[in-house]
Image (cartoon, rainbow, N blue to C red):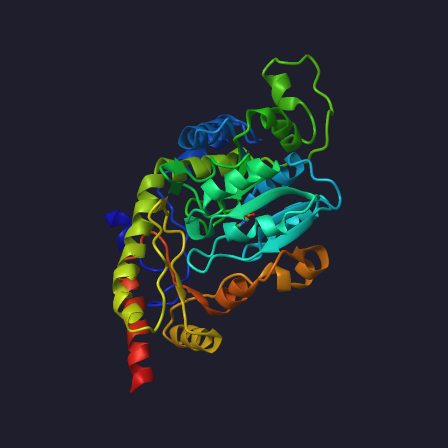
Length: 392
Ligand SMILES: *Cc1c(COP(=O)(O)O)cnc(C)c1O
C-alpha cells in the first residue's frame, strides 16, 4: 500500500488525471510464466484460474473470460434468443455497448428513466414499458451501486423476461449480502483499463442459469463444441451453432490474475478515497452547492465512481473548466442513448426520460484511482475554493 502511494502521479507534475491504471506488481511475473509456458491462446491455465476466481466470488454456474465487457454483453444478447423486432428494456444513461449488443441481434432497445438517487434504472417505470415483444431487461449497476434487484427480478419472473446485469462497474460490489452479477440469468463484467480491476481490454460473462452454460461456451468458441471436445464429452469437434471468437489470449488472463490476487486491496484503496471525498464534500452539500452520491443502505458499492450533482449544466461546465485550469481532470458522463443519433435510429423511449436528461446535464465525476495520496484533498480544496470565489 505504501509503495503504491509513493509513486508520483502520471502526467505533468502536479496534474491529477481522471483515472490511472493500478498495477499490483505481480503482472510481469505471471506474463513471464505464460510466455515461458508456450501456451498463449485462450482457455489455458491462467484463464481457468481467473474463471475459478470469478466463480467462487460470484457463486455462478460458469464464468467465461471474454476480450471485453462489450463481448460479454453481445454473448448475453445472443443467449437471450432475441429475434428481430424483440424489445429489451434498459436505461438510457449507460455506455453504448449495453444497447449495441441488442441492436446487433436486430432487437430494439427501449429506454426507461433512471432514479434520481442512484442513477440506476427506475424499477417503478419498467412495467409500463413492457409490451408483448419484450424479452429481457438489461440493468446497469451505475458506479457499482446496485439496482433494486428484488423488484426487478420479481417483475421479470411475473412477465417471464430474462435479466442481464451490465456489471461492468460492479466487480466485488453487493446487494443484501449477495454479489452483483449473481442475480440475473447472465451478467457482463469489464476489465477495461478504466475499471476497478483491469487487463487493458478484457471482460467476463457470468452464466448464472446452468441451462445456458453449454450454449455460452459454444458461442464463445466460434460456434463450435471445442470446450466439450477437449473435456472428452464429445468425439467430434465441429460447427454446431452461431458464434464468434469472444475469448482473450492467455497474456490477458495472466495480467488479470495478478489483479484478482490483489482485488480486495485495490477496492479498499478506492473506497478510502471515495470516503475522503464524501467527508470532504459534506459541508458543501449542507450549503446546497452540490449533491454527493446517495449512500444506499442495502448496497455495498465498490467505489468505482465518485459522481457529484451540480446545480445545472452551466454550473457543471464552469467547474470542469476551473478544475482543468488547475490540472484536475473532472468529467461529465454518458450522453443519454435515447438522444444519440444511433439511439434514435435503433431504439425507442419507454416513458419520460426527464430524470436522465436532468442528471446527464449536471453530473460530474471526480478523479478516482487506487494509489491516490494527497490528491483527494487537493480536489476537495479546489472545489471549496471555487465556491468561496463565486460567493465573494
Ligand atoms: C465499460 C463499460 C462497458 C464496456 O466494457 P468494455 O470492456 O470497455 O467493452 C459496458 N457497459 C458499461 C456500463 C461500461 O461502463
